[in-house]
Every structure is written in C-alpha cells, then in structure tokens.
Image 1 (cartoon, rainbow, N blue to C red):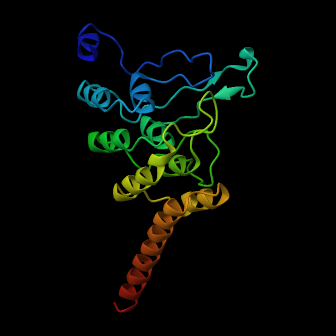
Image 2 (image 1 turned 30 degrees about the horizontal axis):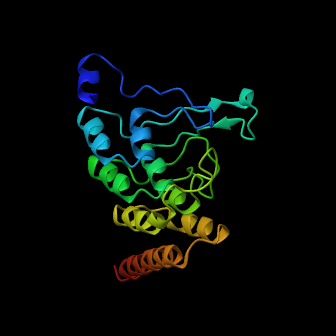
Length: 194
C-alpha cells in the first residue's frame, strides 16, 4: 500500500496531523516506529522515506491539555527507542538511521539535544502514553543502540540515575562508560609513547 501511495505521488515524509491525545505531528515512519511495525519501516525505507525526518512541534494548548507544545525534533529512531521497541530500533538502524542524532528543541543533559539512547532511558513520559509502551524492551533497546555506536553514554547514564532506571539498564550504561574510559586511557598512553 505504501509503495502504491508513493507511486501515486504521496509525500511519505509529510507530517500527519497530531491526534487529540496531543501527540506530535508524526510522519508515516514515526508512526511505524511508534507502533513497532517493522514491515512498514522496511517498506518506507525502501520507498525513500527520510530516516532522519523530525517530528513537528504542534501547539495543542487549545485542547486544554497540560502540555502546550509537543514534538521537539524527534527522529523515528528516538520514538522507537522511547517506547522500548527493540525490533523497530534494529530495523531503523539496519536501514541507516543515525544512532547519535540529537533533538532540535527537547530538554536534555546533552548539549546537542537528547539522543535515542537518552530517550530509551527516559521514555516518552507524556501524552496518552505516560510511559514506554514496552518498558521491558528498554534494556534491549539500550544494548542495541550501544552496539550501533551510540556515544552520549555519560548523558544517558545521568538520565538513568535521575530516573531510577532498572539495574539491567544501569549496568549496560556503566559498562559502556567504563569501556569508553579504558579506550581513552589506552589512547592517552599510546600518545605518550610517541
């Protein structure tokens, strides 16, 4: 169906209107990531969907919700990560998503904006889904992102400690921080011997 829409001239990167639950204006790829629809992710990627497309910030204050603005420049990978959808995360990474992209206007411990790794630690925390749809999948998402080269580990660990993350998630992040520290020490000792 997606291929038929593209052949008919549909813009698969256009945002879809935000719903009454004050979710951001997502593209089809965002919705596929949000729904853990791996087949749809693969078809959209094959049809040329922008893998780094950002959600639109929408003013939903007229709905009388406690959140006035939603969105914040999240990529589909961030949406999948925040909801604990490891299958969608892996499909997006396999399609070529940047595991280190930062948000454009979302609060973060990182100066470059929140990454998918930080979203996996913090979760979505707003809208009709006050937490991750699949919280049990979050540690596996963290591991998949680390395997894909996610680098803002210190910021994610800070977020995890602040949010009282699971022991499994903390252990994965702490091990990644330790690995980074050992690599830095090895590089420093190598440059001293030159």
